Image (cartoon, rainbow, N blue to C red):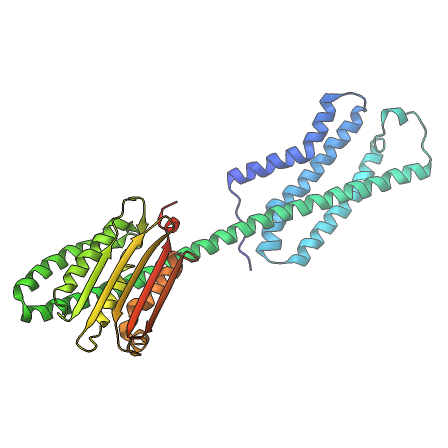
Length: 362
């Protein structure tokens, strides 16, 4: 059952004004513009405008929201309106008959009417004004239905935004410990190799954690900050990198301060390369390239790998970062990104491009 629709004061005033303009305004213009029609004709038109307005308001404020939508009782809605129209079409001619009959144009006032003309006059009244009553009911329904669809659309958008926010918070809750766990493991391993570098790395990690705790809680961060974070992370990870692994990192300078991105989004691809780089025949490599042009932010990360190993990793628990980045991209940049992940001839490639227009707040 569709919940009843509530009317605000502003909405009520708008509806009343619309009813006045639609039903009363033509009669008021006729009243003040010329006097070629008898006064009882103008009175008749104003009276019928009141009747149309009454039917419209009863349907708009009561029958449509309370019965048609509220109780979802469509047969009752139609029965009430049919009875209402039939009663008005029957009683109004009797009332006019008791008060001198239906008004006639000035040039026909003194011409006697036959019984057939009398009957045709009332038949025209029933057909013309009955149709107007039905149109008043249809207009009230159309306006309420449009309002109901708009409110339903707003509720759907609110629920969708809430769902996206909940899912993004869940993804961040998984990603932050994931990053911290890997970083602490790296520093722990570095302690036995080079305690001085481990101490320096711990200091850099504390700075990075400040970014994660404060900046990454926002929906977006400036692209400059994200690039700086990636640079710090790359330097931290390189301290314990095997000497046989060659690291290349090219990060573009961002001159556009208006560009913003979801925090830690690109980091996932970079972190994955450090975590899963393989040394094949005493050699390995990690290539990181991030650049921006007028159309796209492009990030390409490649690392040496063993055939089939990365596919297995993505399916397992350690692939949480890669799975999260796809979910985040779908939520944050639908139809505005391209993501490729694949391994070929011992090289694992992760390539992400995001339209720059999607990185600028509206």
